[in-house]
Image (cartoon, rainbow over all chains, first blue to last red; front, side):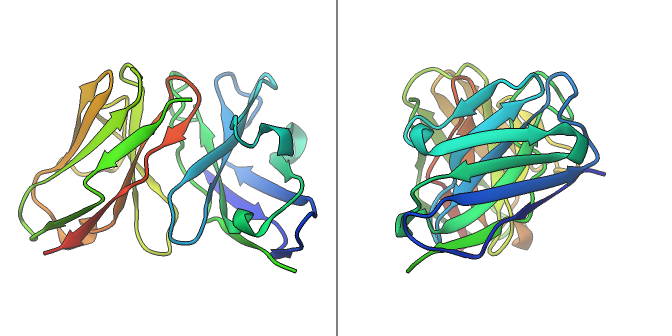
Length: 123
Length: 106
């Protein structure tokens, strides 16, 4: 069974750096074709893809947020970490992590998803 | 960046009826299109990948079709648990989600 859980501070101040951790079980991010991505959702709004890291350390970023994001993985801990710098109130959202390629390495759909963690940006 | 649009924004359908949701890409995404269902307060759940392949455990009343830039999710006979928000996502070039279609009870 594959499970993922996101962890992060619930409240961050503007200009601070947010560190999000995805801890997972049931698969390995060192397996060929596997990646782990981050997606966020502001309250009442749509999903927005942020970043993804593959088994071979290939990293992909949303073009609009690339300058603020860094994604890394720790295979031994089964964790993927995303840092987002210079946080702003508009970054208030539920942040989800989800893998690609765990059931089928031929395509990058996200399945399954973690429960998400709500991060509020406010002074 | 590929932009995804979905229509309608809100769809009102009675239980037992058919629902047809549309998704359009700003450029071809081949068949690299997925659909997700999100219920209030829950994480999204994968329904369809590769345009038309149902994910594990997804009922046969859900079907996907299309290619290139035009895609459709059809729910053949709506059940009460199907009323939710549906998102399409392309993974042909980067990863982009559509704005969603809210399926509500008529």
